[in-house]
Image (cartoon, rainbow, N blue to C red; front, side, top):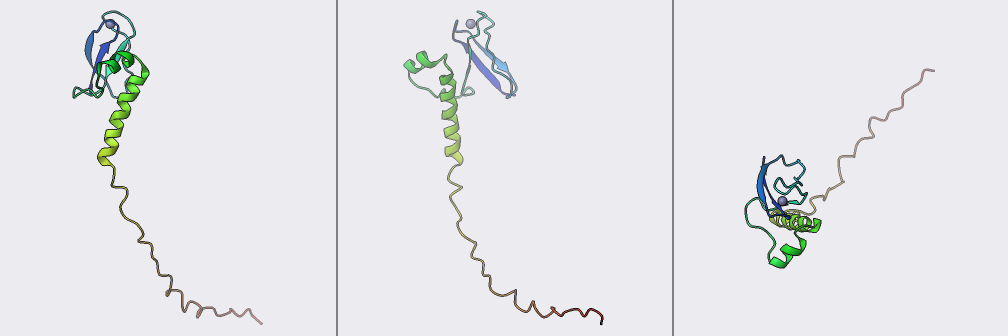
Length: 113
Ligand SMILES: [Zn+2]
């Protein structure tokens, strides 16, 4: 289970929490009691966003999390992209041969007299 880091945008309280990756993010700050916890993205290694203006204006919004997430996704795609472009064709089937001589067994069955 990963450790998630939260910070309260109301009082600035920070905490860490073990959670399953499918668990809902915490909302309520244990210190001030307001539902203003934000899960910090990045797993302890380098926050993605730069610039204090962005931090202040968008920190509490959904777009903050969305932007951070899309950044991470983009890095992931770039990491394993490029391997889908290889390999074309290979389908030059020659349809000649094979079907010849298939008629020799076509003898009509005599039906009595
Ligand atoms: Zn708080």
